[in-house]
Image 1 (spheres, rainbow, N blue to C red):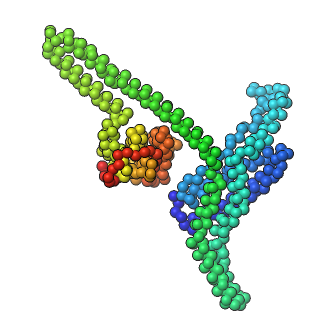
Image 2 (cartoon, rainbow, N blue to C red):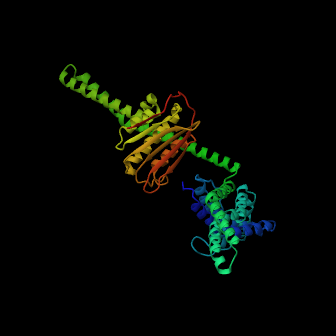
Amino acid sequence: MERRTPWAATGRSLALVLLAVPSLLLTVAAVVGLVLAPLGVGLALLRAVLPAVHGLARAARGLATSALGHPVPLVALRAQDPSPLLDPAVWGLGADGRLREVDVAALSRSAGEPFRQGWRWLVDADAWRLLGWVGFAATGGLLLSALVVLLVPVAVAAVVLALVLPAAAGTPWPWALALVALAVLAAWTWWRGGDALGRARAAADAALLSPGRQALLEQRVRDLAASRSRSVDDAAAELRRIERDLHDGAQARLVSLGLTLGLVAELMADDPDQARALLAEARGTTAAVLRDLRELVQGIHPPVLADRGLSGAVEALALDLAVPVTLTDRLPGRPPPAVESAAYFAVAESLANVVKHADASRAWVRLDAAGPVLRVEVGDDGVGGADPARGSGLQGVRARVAAFDGTMGVDSPPGGPTVIHLEVPCAWSSPKTSPSSATV
């Protein structure tokens, strides 16, 4: 999160003042488009204006996120259909490059596509939110940002005039004092209120650019459907892994054990020494089968997790790592077993990434709760630069918590440190008496 200072607020406000110029032009174009919408021409104009407004909104969303210190959602603009007029076939050009007869009916339908797209946006509530924001950015938002930007030059100009005018034009000293007072007032207002004014503008942008309730519900349904699909795929992949491990490991060893015991039965009377040697080999095979089964169970639900809970399981996990891990446990109790297992494997994957990629000298895990939400933080002092979009490991962590309606955030600037935040809604049981902290 960027530090909140008047200088930072002034820089953001200056950027918003510059954005107000295209915002004003787009506002005028949008008003013209709305006025001419009944004639059809305005619908085509709106089709061109709204994507440009959305582009400006993305820039303003970034500035608002910097000012408020938390991500600001951006209303989604319904995707445009590609213009059929760009299809060579509409103009009679075949795939082989030869000219054919122009399909007049198709060309007529294609020519009306911009108007149909403009109409779809005209009845879209999210498109109206974008139009409302661009109008605000060109009027009230411009005034708020310009006030922050102008406070500094007003203070400087007042001081300069207070020093220059009395000497140059014989201005009475009360006027000079008034100018000094104006400079002090402007500087004090900028220093004490510049950041507040900047955040007020950012809050207004966030309110206008955030999706409406209907859009949020639709996105929620899409997220839950995607999460359910990933959970089903993950469960199927896990079953295939278990089946493969049993087939290639325990099953093969048990077949070998059966053959060995059959040979023992045949050799018991004629060659007892060889039979005893085969029995020793069978005992070794039995131990190997048990080891394979333990490893298989460990991958499904570690016994230490059931016995000692999330904190104890993470502590046991950290003992085998090459990087020292500090564990802080402030959980009020135990989450449900499924959530506990997902959190454990998410921590395990995150710590594995620390060992493999971070080049860190230490790491930490913090387990905490905020009401009915399990919060997990995994951090390290390594090189940073972790990007969930580039690595399957972090994507797997996100998928694990998303299956329980959880979220993952990654803060990993180049040079470090890297901090991964996980939040999973859950209910608590088995309250504890006190928090704990340990380094392992």
